[in-house]
Amino acid sequence: FRAIVDWLNVRAISTEDDCPESPTMDEENEGILRHYMRLFFTNSTGTLTNIESVIIKSENYAKTIHDWLSEDDSEGVLSLVHRSSRDGSTIDIDRLESNEDGSNGRALVIIETTEGHIIGGYTNAYHLGLDSAQPCASKSFLFTLCGFDLTSPCKMKVKNGVNDVTVGFPIVGECEVSVLFHNTRDGDFFIYPPALLRLSIGNLYKCGPSEQLRQCDCTIKEMEIFQVSDCVDPQKSNERCHSSNAVASNRVDGDIFPAGMSDAMKEKWRALEEMEAEILSLEDSFTDEERFIESFASGCTSDIVMLNVSGTMMATKRATLLVVEESMLAQQFDDSKWTEQGSNKSHVKQWTTEEVVEWVSNIEGIQDDVSNLFMGNKINGSELLALDKDGLQMIGVKRVGTLCLLFDEIKSLKETVGQDVATLIEHSPYCFGKILDYLRLKQHNSLDLTGQPPHPTVCDRRKETFDKVVKYYFPGDSSKLILG
Image 1: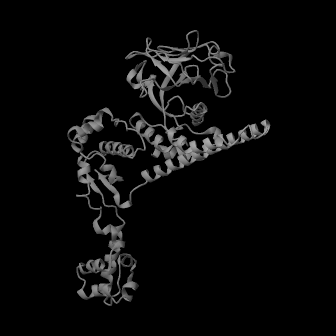
Image 2 (image 1 turned 120 degrees about the vertical axis):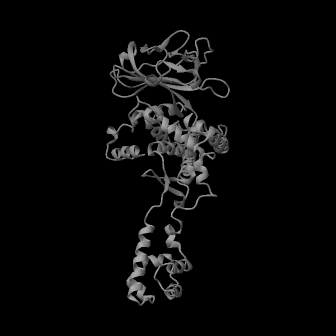
């Protein structure tokens, strides 16, 4: 979270043309950072503007890709399934998920070359394996973000009249990755393992303004493949628009109005329908944002737990510690055993007059009749903390010794109220911190705010200790949730 805040601070003092690169962290914490970036930074359609990419480091490039997808009604959540520097030149076919009907879904390929070019392609239908059926993509395009002597990003659509473009990942099980943008007669974009990109753009796709794109061989430095999945339920918007659209389509009858007037009125209705659809989309996004805020910021301050982990202070919501019901943490902090930290001392301001009187009566050296003064003046907790020596005299405390003693006790009570009372956890702060980070992400998932969290990444020298601490707090099969 500190990395995100630092990034936002730099963004606040940067110009639009000089936005800072997305925040990064070491390998151990990169997964957690990506999770929070997805949680906090979504655009109006509910998709992540920032892409989980080591190639796309500019927010402007990320926005450009999402805008291109949106133009083709292909906007969605981008889930990384392959990165060559991480996964090598092999890909697990199971990571490219299929749709419910068994057909293969949408994919985005992004490539960075050693020459400094960034190029890629999108398809809404791909085929797996050399011998598999080859469905034609109804929506497909190539793009370049930089390089090739271009001054700005360029989107290359399928040529008019070309309707049999196929995009293939010719892989079987786990073998070397190839990606083809082609048809039965020709091709524009071929990737050959381990690192050759061959371009011949202009056959199926409209070529960009650079001659380099027409015939070029490049060396691949990094390649990423993303699954593109739906992020909104189109039925929700369709149901809301259906009635008004049906009425609007019948408002203008060509038999009643002259042809020119009828066409003009139809054009106006189409514009109104587009504006209505945009407004409904904004309403949906506001509803989703309100739900996110309510889910993420729910709870009260009394449910915040302070933990002293071998001298390192940590704070979390009690709901986070309860997210895995079988764990020892859930048992330790459940409703049957949990009492708010600091007992009554942390709530002195809410004390009744009777509780104030009881507190005064328990002070060693104070005579019994002094507590009656507090009862007679109906002093509550907030008023007790505000009393100084003059105030004590005004309620009837006469003796100097009693006055000084009461003043010192009230002063000590104020100091106690301001102190955080923490539950002691006698384990490694590093290991317990990793567990706490995972439970926070798991809590977000239980609220349907994010997907399943990644397993914690732990350095080798701490791995054995981490496993033991996890198995202590998560006995039996529950430890598999964190350890995998």
